[in-house]
Length: 501
Image (cartoon, rainbow, N blue to C red; front, top):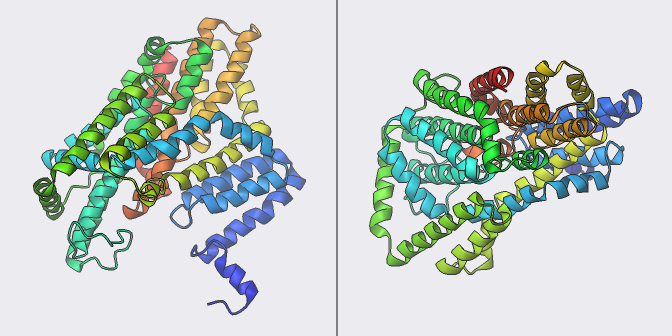
């Protein structure tokens, strides 16, 4: 324990994070102003991006909101960006913030229905390869019509439910034990430890297959990802037009992605192939049967309400009847009203998962504002536009892919489509070529960006969610597990863009 006030400050700084981690963050904070004043804002901007990626990579050591937030505040203080620029970025992405605030909470109130449904799938499908294909293809299909973050929230909710059920049993407790810390293995019985580790590997692979599925489906339609809608509006495509222009790339990539899913499970490479241990399957089967037998009429009515709300959710999102976040708020109101959840504290629990990540996303937008203000990507855009027209789609795909790996793919797509639209308005390119570049930009920001968690909001959400530390899914582990998918999706996508767009 600290015995002076100064040592108290040192002890409290970033809490239980390792001392070396605290020292690295302090080094960043000291170095940034020096680099800014000696090497200029451009170098300082790229250094800030690298530092922020480091905080994401070390998410299990300390939640990135804290060190990332300190870096963002310093960027404002030394003039890398302005409060108005950050506000503009947040305002531009306000639909995503609304989605996180309300849609993730809405999924929380549907967790009983989700757990019942997916438990039956998990228990019923014994082949791991078939189960992985089912998760990946279902996530792809849902993400084509819904939002990738919503689909990811569903997958996370289900995985947390599965993990909690077995962790209680592995700790010598019953299914219905309320006061249990699933994040600690202190009470886990030695006999169950190996099965628990194997179960973690099993869930990790399902989570990654599902997350990759959101990217496979999200690229295909104008509602699949936020930047898709933006690109469709700028180019003038409707739903069918967007799908048809993307199909020469999106459909072959989907087939290649699903084949990769199957192959990885068969070959057990890159951390995949974990099987569901028989004792865990037995526990989940008993849990499913126990839940079924003790389900009251009120419980059955609650499940029907959740199913009705889920149907409204799907219809509302598929036809874009309102902003995604507002539909999530509607789901919260319907389910809580008709299932008897009337206590403020019960409702508050639903927001515990989403609001920390929402805050982190705002910090991320501050870093994006630095990229925007310092025009860090502009030299790349100017170079690509200077190339012969035949080479531009492929180079746009590569440039978008690389930048989306280190930055937000929504921002990268926004910058690129704006620059290309200016070239069209200036008469530098034809509308036909503009459409080809739009396809390259959309596919480039959606496909190679799976390489790192900071490329897509859904991946970042998974990394910082409650399930990641439970199943030991770190930044490095996600990069390794996403690598074969990135190679296949990026390679097939680039080939199709060069030869068929």
